Amino acid sequence: MNETISRQKFLQYTASAGAVVLLSSLEGFAWEKPEKKLRVALIGCGSVSNRYIPHLQTSPLIEIVSLCDIKYERAVAQDKQYNVNAATYPNIDKMLAGVPFDMMITITDMQVHGELNKKALLAGKHVWSEKPMANTYAEGKALFDLAKSKKLGIWGAPAVVNSPQFVFMNKCIQEGKLGKVASAHGQYGHTGPTWSAFFYEKNGGSMPDLGVYNIATLTGLLGPAKSVMAMLSIVKPERTVDDKGKIKVEAEDNAHILMMHDKNVISHVMCGFNYFDPHGHEAKDQPLHSIQIYGDYGNLRLIGYDWETNGVYLDNSWDEPAKLYQKDSEGYVWQEGATKIGEALVKGIEPRINAEHALHVLEVIEAARKSSATGMKIHLKSKFPWPMVK
Ligand SMILES: NC(=O)c1ccc[n+]([C@@H]2O[C@H](COP(=O)([O-])OP(=O)(O)OC[C@H]3O[C@@H](n4cnc5c(N)ncnc54)[C@H](O)[C@@H]3O)[C@@H](O)[C@H]2O)c1
Image 1 (cartoon, protein in one colour):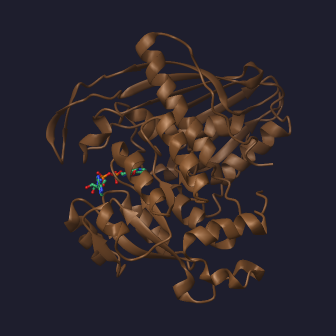
Image 2 (cartoon, helix red, strand yellow):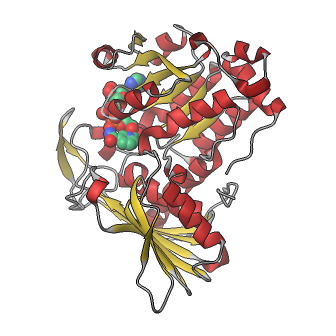
Image 3 (cartoon, helix red, strand yellow):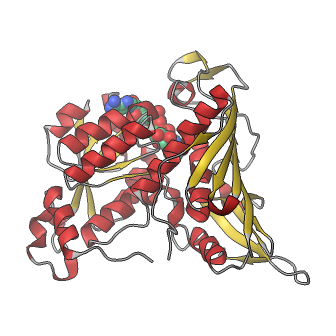
């Protein structure tokens, strides 16, 4: 799958990680003692921390040393709930000045990811960020360049490219099993988060929260988008959420995004917060497909969601019914991104999750906003290494 990074590159990474005392003996890149684990600090102790913390705790290579939330009692509560025994902080400045760590994991409200990620990079920390990495492509690219200049890494969710179903679909496309690929579609929606207002505020919306998965999957499989056209709308202008009561919805809760890829391949994503879906976040038995890819010789349908997959139908015969492949997710879970990136840093391997890909997805989202506002087709400038699995 992924090439191993060079010894020099690895040294650069680790030298900046502070964790690297350990690499005095490079052979095997082994961390032998618990104190040589990658020390991570998690910022944002809300809903998704309930998935991140236990997953990080499964890794023998990672130690959660700090928890932070501006609602400080949440950091304290999560520390207790998961027996983390971490230092707890009420804001990022105190955390950066506190117990040393190597990588920050940003799982706060979407709108503050960029500013928090910048502070962490400036303080010499690697970053794993929930989506989006920043509010705009320009802000995200500046973070990426800052990270590079400081020999640090920044990576962003989602982790969909890690699933074996993504690998299977990539292989089918690259081996020509679909013939000439023409079109693809992805869809993901539910009736919207009920706990926090930020999902509906400016720079929130169903694209960075939900569509982001399908955009990552489709660009990951078909290559970078060259241009984007979109229509976005607000179907429900008011909502009631736990943290702020009745609010005005400012960001789109319904989005249709068209992407033009290389070789005239067109893909489409629809996402929204008003989509009845009784399978919700329990996709285990979801029998319907949410991603489909068509060529002139075959098609693929991904069953379940790209973030929680139940297999892929490959239909490429006039005589035989479609066959279901890759039902086994081989341990892949959507919340694994931070753990996998942390482990990759420790092991000195290049992860498949790619920062430039996350930035490209961010540019698609921003372009969709622009296209919908102006009625224009928006040309993109960003690219990422593709195909993502060779
Ligand atoms: N909840 C999910 O199922 C889920 C799944 C995948 C990804 N995500 C992503 O994870 C992120 C968080 O979502 P959530 O559902 O956990 O939201 P949430 O509202 O439950 O939690 C966010 C937490 O961040 C804290 N916070 C906000 N600004 C902060 C700051 N400046 N410093 C420190 N803490 C701050 C809030 O007080 C809150 O506790 C979002 O980017 C979301 O898209 C969520």
